[in-house]
Length: 163
Image (cartoon, rainbow, N blue to C red; front, side):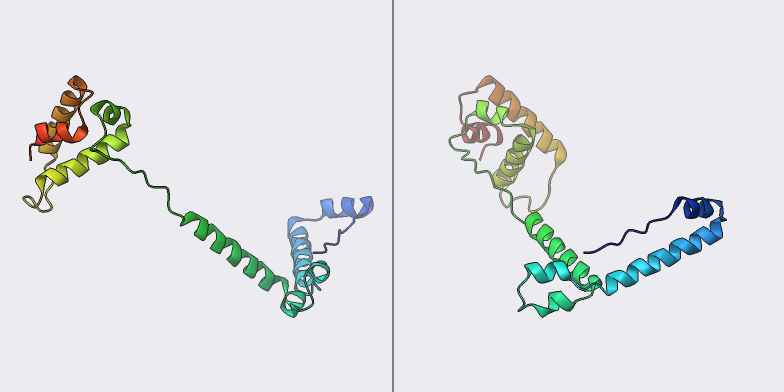
């Protein structure tokens, strides 16, 4: 892309400073208009050197089309990167001890307790979550695992939630 630098002599600079705001604003609007016209008439010379001649679209395209195309490609790349799935963790609860369970972190504990609550309720309560019962069972489960760190999580759940 070519940009031409507008050079202003010190005398013209002094003249510009002393003009009122409305005149200065109109001068800036004129410069911006000239700049836009230059971009619209851009010949694409740098692309002609790098892109093959078989792509006449790129050589003759106005700057607006090039910008929209590149912005669209950038947006599509950003969306595709954002849509990549995170690596899922796999937990084997039959081999996980209570100590490992308690050390796995608050978020993992919440996920496992929620899953176990649903598993041990089965089809009895359909889609009902009683938070008071859930919290009471979670406290019992935490106390049991704290006292028995070597017991597996499934055994502890059988003891506490009893299936």
